[in-house]
Length: 425
Image (cartoon, rainbow, N blue to C red; front, side, top):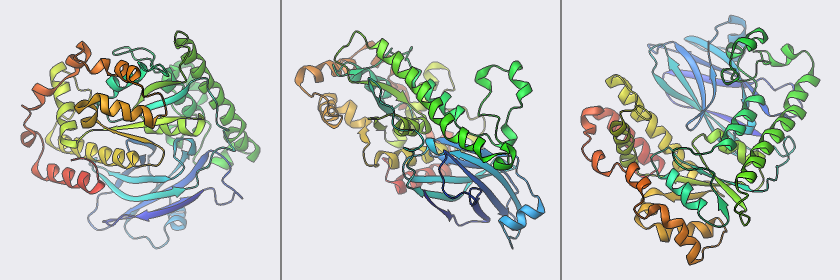
């Protein structure tokens, strides 16, 4: 695996040093690293370092430390107030190549991009040989409010594909099992580890990442054989068991459709989608995008129609601007993912503008039958269904005053960021 760190310009000095330097080869699923940041001049002291792959948070490094002897090793000669932390990133949650954003959050909660970890050659077949399921996964990834539910239902109407359940009771056991496998194979950051005496008093859903890790991973485990077990046989067997359980359940649910060769599942977590690509043979992914302003309007209108905060929960002008920039960041990342080789890009505008034409092309892209009968079956959810009407925000989104909700500078920065990424504005 080849990794380089690219620092971003700004008031923060930063760097990354890998804690796996003493290992002959990176042969486990955990990538250990120290990240440091130095606030110079008038820059605020960093409170947290966040490693992100688009919308997915891979690790939160907090609290940050300022131990002098370690700072001297990590950042010799660094000026300003320097803080550092250690993290282990699960390589099973990464694609074969890509970039991890390194962000800093200061005491005021302001987030800034300080660099990127660009990686390639993340080949995990020696750790988890691809698992072959009876039905191959077809993932639909998006940011929400982009037609993922209706597209999943349409694909499930094809003779070769199965979608288990429907809105509002979508069956996502595959995602559940992937998340459980990711938890079981991910070392925790030291600050977020749970002590063994806490297990009995906590519900399993609150346990979070495994508690066996420590800031000094190798020394805490005490024996390299234990690390090799956690990152080798244990990781392989945990993933195989949980993915196998999901596959068996989906196969049972699809028993009434003997011609099916795959199953469809919505997935907003890109780390889980990456895990699926790494663990499951034949995984296919549809990346569903929508124009940025239309997406934002639809999210806001959806919440307003239902009196919810599923998408927008800002409680101040500053929080609203931060939300808009976060959505711009996610939109840009999704646009980059849509361009990845081997993934299928579907634009919301094309899908709703001419469902038959786009679904015909999509069937061919997925290498399933595109005959008229199959395409007609897939078009049923688009033909004036009650579901479509219930989800529509066409009337209410036009009334939204974005100028009143977000500052001019935030709107301009978000638009420029999206435009620069090549995403639809």
